[in-house]
Image (tube, rainbow, N blue to C red):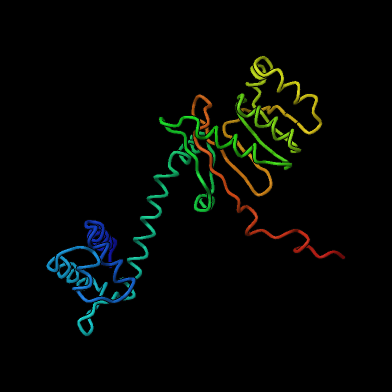
Length: 252
């Protein structure tokens, strides 16, 4: 089969939701045309026409009046469903990916499927801020590590609450926000200077995206051109595929 023929087959399947539904139904189990008519809510004529098209492409076979998918038909179905899943995922994660790519961050593709995403919108412009604040307030007694290009009151209040609850906080901020932070957030600045559990560092280089981690929780925050948090992608499965050093290294 040529690439052009494969493209034609893809267009054929994608061109009708009923075709997709019939192939999906047959992937689940062999069926007679009458059962397909009920399963996909289509006329018998439509079902018979689609089945004929599938047979022409060797996606299904007919045996004892029952239609069943072939091995190639099953692979076509599975590949198409995987494509739909990726397209839906791209629609959801597209803004995050585009925002971090704008600042030159090569975000690993493997990090997307198992991650949760919070996206700010016109209806909820503070969604990303609220999620980060919530995570920070939930860091009871944890060692919090963060990198941020901005300092805002919500983060300061959440950090203070975390410190009061026994957490330790290590934060790296952008050099450009230090003066603003000192002027506008005097109490937070004093605590950062005086609290032994709070360590704040100033980056020599511009910070263009945010990082946040405690225990098993890890986040990457994408900011827009005005340094407003727009997207937060988070994961709690960082160590699922990792092994402790003590299990790998044999001591002599």
